[in-house]
Image 1 (cartoon, rainbow, N blue to C red):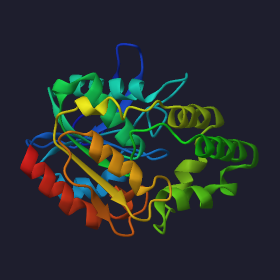
Image 2: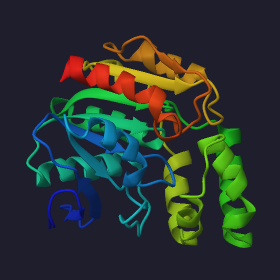
Image 3: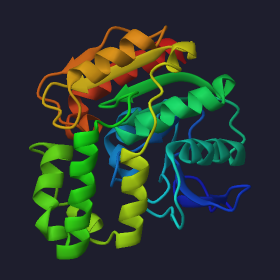
Length: 266
């Protein structure tokens, strides 16, 4: 079901999953926007403002986030299929895909599942590898403390990892509303993902990889590994002082690179 351009709309996939998204409209080439863990489609507001007059931007609430529910265990391959179902609903044959952190995991899987439908990739603060076991354990423990003692006990730590020095006040109320079972589902999908670095060598579309030098979740080496693995990747772009969710926190630094890359490839 679609309720009109630029409002939050929904599609139900063939396997019954409801997916919410925003079709920002426009006559230009389509670009799918995939947000980070704990975020939603609105985190792309700076890019919609900067690029919305030249591209058809489609921002998706990924499974378990925003207005898209999660009621059973899932992985990022499932989320990639959700995003492809949105393209089907909109009758968009192919699109560039931009993803920050978790969104990058999904973007890579979209390109692996349907290479003919992904024309270019923009990957920000992301990785093609499995989660380090020590970090995975720490994140799982953080989620259980969140559930047992309330989100306010971990909000500061989560905000620091994800947003660095960026003001988290727009997002912390949303985080506090995440139900325990949903939190477990999205955390399990995040830390339980398989590595795809050995498979992305077959993705032969232009790719732009950006990474913040102050990313507290993934070292720059993760981005360097992605650039080395993707055959059509441009040289790595480092954003000085950029936090993990750098498309939001450092949009003024990121957007010129997005504009140049998209205009050259689409």
